[in-house]
Image (tube, rainbow, N blue to C red; front, side, top):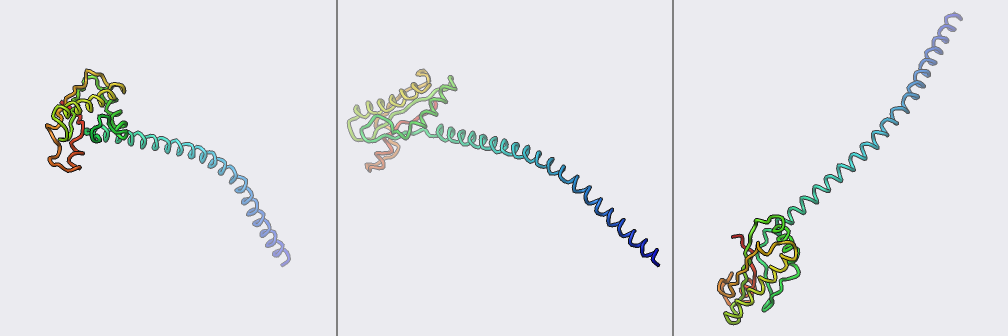
Length: 180
């Protein structure tokens, strides 16, 4: 009986020692795996930041292209009463038009100057021409060739809106960019 109990105790100790030995082996192997994960984590972080930077650059380029297209679709520039200088807010849009003309030397445009019906016919023709020439000069200074641009003044002859209200007058004081 004593032998059987000694055998059982020995077997129990051997089993316990085996379990402890196996668990210590797996603990030693475990630290190697996190080191590999941590290294790939740095690579993943770097790769993700590069992806985010590329996405941001693509979004910025798309936004710039949308702005360019919107600017090139803007073809009418309005003026204050009896003023030939275009508005400060129109500078960026006109700069896009100038760049477009500079990039496309075969492209031609016509600047049509207009005025409201107040004033004499001759005065309004001259005012429409001064307005169109103001935009012409800005386009040329910003890269367009003079040979690409034709200037025409219609004065009060082609109103955008008929009527004698301030709103009608405002819509008639304009320069239009026309592609012939």
